[in-house]
Length: 243
View (cartoon, helix red, strand yellow):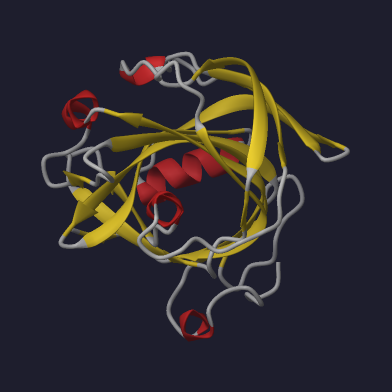
């Protein structure tokens, strides 16, 4: 991935340390009570809500060009599918993402992200295949001594790209320019990220099986999820700093 034709110009002058491109991403979101998530989030973080409800997301996609700044992308290391489970939090007025888990097929990326960003990454077997407009996605966690998690589904975009209107639910769920994580001592760190506005599309999905939130003791609502698709997006990330 070249240095960011799709990254906002002011960001290119800052000290970002990681670059990547996300492909064929599906946001699946369900509203959940704040009380269901509060015990799972550090006290230093406020759970961010929309309409009085917290939201939990399950997000399958694949990545290419994952690399440190000034280092070229490497075959078999820089491209792999990923699946994350997330919610939304705030600290000091900065709205961001809290990850409950991130599953990936790259053992190197899993260990590097655990060490550098303190993120709960896990080894997994993941298949993400494009067949026509459909993305066929299957993931099974294989990480040693980790709680089980799996997903089997297909999804596709069904409308034209658009940018979320500021203040809308679409914007709340997707326009997150930092992530929060806690280190082994419980200290919360924030890492800023940058990208252009999401090119969102309406989507449809057929979920064959999903067992991604049992690992954290949360049951997904029986209602269908809110869906958004994005074909690709270039992203850069800064080094984490203490909150």
